[in-house]
Each structure stands twice: as C-alpha cells, then as structure tokens.
Picture 1 (cartoon, rainbow, N blue to C red):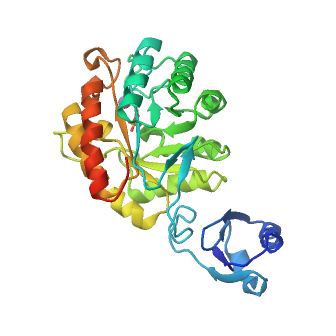
Picture 2: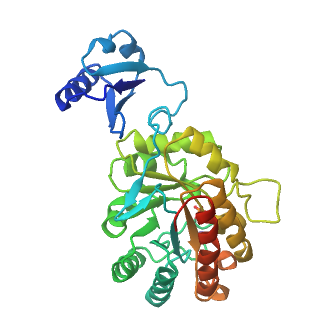
Picture 3: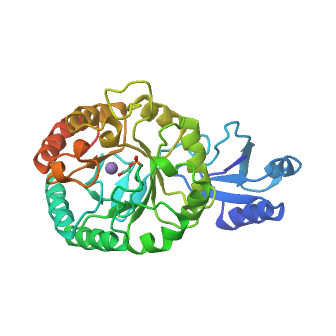
Amino acid sequence: MIIVLKPDITEKQIQHIEERIKKLGLKPILSRGVERSLIGVIGEEDKLRATPLEAIEGVEKVMAVLKPYKLASRDFKRESSVVSIKDVQVGGKSIVVMAGPCSVESAELLSEVGHLIKKAGAKILRGGAFKPRTSPYSFQGLGEEGLKYLKKVGSKEGLPVVTEVMDPRQIALVDKYADAFQIGARNMQNFDLLKEVGKTKKPVVLKRGMSATIKDLLMSAEYILSEGNMNVILCERGIRTFEDATRNTLDLSAVAVIKQLSHLPVIVDPSHATGKWDLVAPMSMAAIAAGCDGLMIEVHTNPEEALSDGSQSLKPEKFEELMNMTKKVAEAVGRLM
Ligand code: PEP
Ligand code: MN
C-alpha cells in the first residue's frame, strides 16, 4: 500500500500518519520526493483496508501496489533515485565509473591501479578483499589486510571504495573500511545478508544473480529497502544462457526494463558479463546507450598474472581508451562523464 501525501502536508501530520500505521503493527517507510512525498506501508495490508486513511489530514490518496516489490517500484517513487557514495552521486546526469582489480592482491597493485584509474576519470575504486571463488583452492582474497589497502588508496586518491561482503558476520568489519557494500551475484538471494546490510545506512551495489530474473533482483532489493536502507544500486553483470562465446550473456534489456519498473539506479558490469577484455569497451558503450547510470570495470596492471579474472581485466591504457570512447556515447545520449 502506498499513501500519497498532499504537497502542503506538515511534519506533524506526517508523524501522525506514521504513528497510526505503527499502531496497526505495520511499518511505514517515508520517501520524500521533490514534487510529493509518499509513505510505503510494509506488512499485512488487510489491516489497512479497514482503516479510512483518506480521512486523515494530509493524505491525498491510498493506492494498492500490485507488484510484489513495493519500495523498489516506480509506483512508490516516480522520480529516479540518486544514491550518494560519499560525494559521488549515482543515478544523476553523470555516468559513474567504478574500476579496479577483481581482487586486492597487494598494496602495490592497488596503489598503482587506483592512481591510474583516477587519472583516467573513474570516480570509485573497486576491489575484492573477500572473494567468492568457484573453487575452494583458488585465491580467497586478503580479507582485512585487503580492506586496509582499499581504504588507504581510496583516501590517497580521493576515491570512495566499494567492496564485496559475503557473509553477515563480515558486515561490521567491511563497514569500517568501505564506503559501499557490494553484494555479489552468488549472494543475491542470501536473504539474511540482504537484511543485515539493509539495517545499515551504507550504499549497497546489488549484483544480479546469474540465474535471477529481473523480478528476483527487484525482490532482493526489496529486502534491503524494507529494512530502511534506501541506498541501493542495481548491477546487471550478465546471466547464464546457452551461449558460450562469452562468460555470461549481458542482458542489456534489463537496464531498460529496470528503468521502467524501478526508481533505483542501474549500473552495468561488462567485465563479468563478457569474461573477455576486448569485449568490455563495446559492451560499455552499448550499456550507456541503453540508459545505465554507471559501469563497473575490472582493471589490472598485469592481467596475465592476475590472481582472479585476468582474462577480463583491462590494462590501464585500455581502460583510458574505454573512458574516451564511452564519453562520446554518454554525450550523444545526453549524459555527462
Ligand atoms: C566481482 O565483482 O569481482 C564479482 C565476483 O562479481 P560477480 O558477483 O558479479 O560475479
Ligand atoms: Mn572479478
């Protein structure tokens, strides 16, 4: 249920409505818009149907939401959301590029890559300290040591940092060092993890599971939003199909579909989607043309010796070329870069 508030509603009236909802055992979630504010109601809606909410001052109308995701839907919030990762806004006019190595391998690598991606125009540093690897024998990440390097390089270069959290038990630690949490494809439906990051206020980059539908992705976002954290950025990173020419199939239609269904910002990760470094630039350009709000790109100074995802990692000079190419596409579709 969504309660649309009158434009001239007072703070006191908003509080009154929120209290009424809580008294019914339901949870109100306020969304302040430029034109109008709304209150999303979470819980058993039957209880609300018996209450004449329209009778309360400040309420314009009460609407049922037919979609299973409520807070993530455009019905709940018509204007597109802008999520700030420190001072970087994702979802506005600018296309935001997050870049860095797949894994934080060493202080030297991160410092070099951090410097070069910043110089090329990236706005956020990415890198995994906890790695979800298919094999338990593969490099699992440096853990807290990696988080420390991320924080250090991020501060030195003036880049906010995003890194993956795989388990609710890691949240407090990752929270200490990172500016945004990444929930990886393999954990998109780890509902306990989603609920726990939802209890923080820190932005969350939620990656689409490799076998997840768009609806599944939005339902996972709903888990985070319904705990009160509205700072969710969705990420299309390719899905499994019969096609084996690429690591995954980049579902670019998901960008346009999500833009219709949801107010949340959407970014695209062409590195994991293709698995091949020479496909990353063309897919980045296509993603921007399709309407995404940002890109997540893997960059490594020596991909041949990378401990993970070397074959899809760009050398810094290739990354710089990508930035120049994508900028032109961004401008052509009325975005900034
Ligand atoms: C990553 O970003 O390095 C990663 C593991 O991505 P995904 O969860 O999309 O596979
Ligand atoms: Mn990777």
